[in-house]
Length: 68
Image 1 (tube, rainbow, N blue to C red):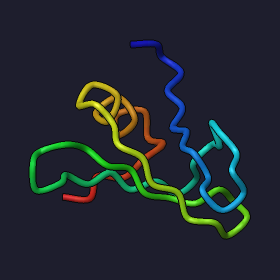
Image 2 (image 1 turned 135 degrees about the horizontal axis):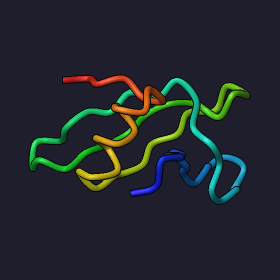
Image 3 (image 1 turned 30 degrees about the vertical axis):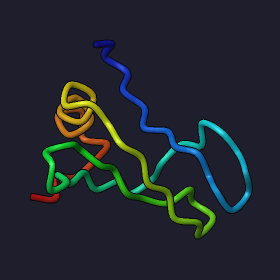
Image 4 (image 1 turned 90 degrees about the horizontal axis):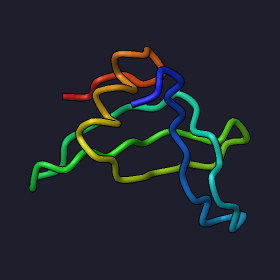
């Protein structure tokens, strides 16, 4: 995994791809998957699913908070 971790998601409201996520909180779903929830800096909410490796890297890098 690269040292520069960046969380991006699809913005359903504006139909933009790869929007950078701010104030991300990573949680675990009931089935054990990782989900990041945050905003795009303009007030629109973003949600994306992540693999365990990327989720842990984002928490370790300090760009996301652990929500469990």
